[in-house]
Image (cartoon, rainbow, N blue to C red; front, side, top):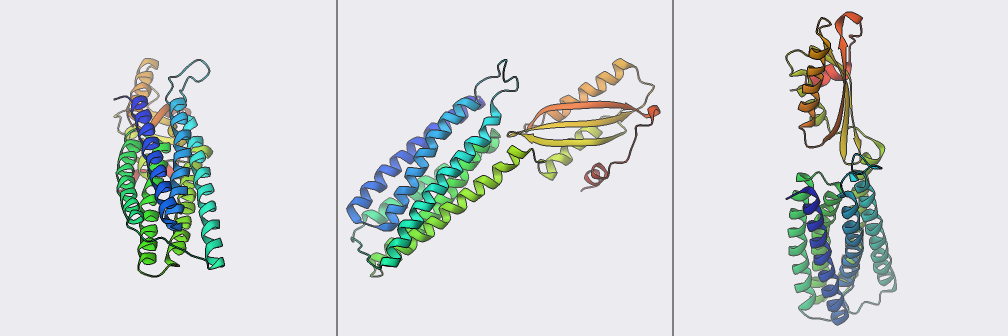
Length: 304
């Protein structure tokens, strides 16, 4: 299945599950009056809202290249992820305010019943399934939006567990456990937003990729039998993809055609990495005296 089809399918699945959980939790909250379930309903409402943004964003990012966007539309994805973070922060703030207000007032009334426990267990199971599915699809398709969604679903498991503890505590005769659990849920929601922002800022500011990937890029460039060295190796994010530029050092007696063939082979080798988009290679002949030391290259080349 193509990247486009995979991302759109996952986005629609996440939207459907979050919408179903929002309606289910909202109904149980109306029946039980549980603040913990209410916080989870708000969380699912935020999840549903940002799922709509994700579906729209993934539709845009998976459009094919055109004249105005020759490299495609993938660079929109980090912005989609930041919309996810904004929705997460909003949900966390609402739940935090509600739980704090209840705790300060001391007026806690909880309706007893098994429905709250059941819906929270179901939520945790559903979120675990979404977490595993979105994470696998996000890593396979190099999609920061899906990885951000997976992170949110992972933390939703923890918030559902915290809410479950609060509901059980309230049923056992400790009513304050319910709003306290809602407070824990709020903190978990806000932390999810911080994680999403932190992970996607790198895509927006052109940060370097992880060291193991930079090492693999250099290894592929130096593995060509006629490449004797490399310098000015730069790899940075452009959206979720990586652009690479580097200078390779070869014997100056090579013909123009031979140098061109080496350049092409190095480009193809580096572009085989799924995270890499464009590769720009400059060929330096030894006789022109452009050879120079590159501490970063030497450090990466010596890594075991």
